[in-house]
Image (cartoon, rainbow, N blue to C red; front, side, top):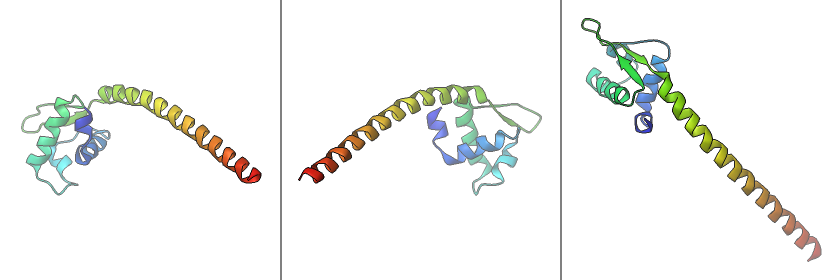
Length: 108
């Protein structure tokens, strides 16, 4: 899933699909890439479970599947808490070092 989300074109496609289902033609319109290239991006997103596609005569409209992204967001939130606590510890250390430096400058 994260490999699929790493590409900016695929992220833009997902943003468009958040507004509603769309065909390859609709999705290709804002990009300077071919419809086959958009189809390849859609296949990556589909394999990652981020979209699903229907067959409607000649069209294969795509629609966003938000559940897998919600699970990824929860997982990333755990790391956000981890890094926030690390940064808080670093801030505390830097404050201690600054105070020690000020004390040395007054005594020196």
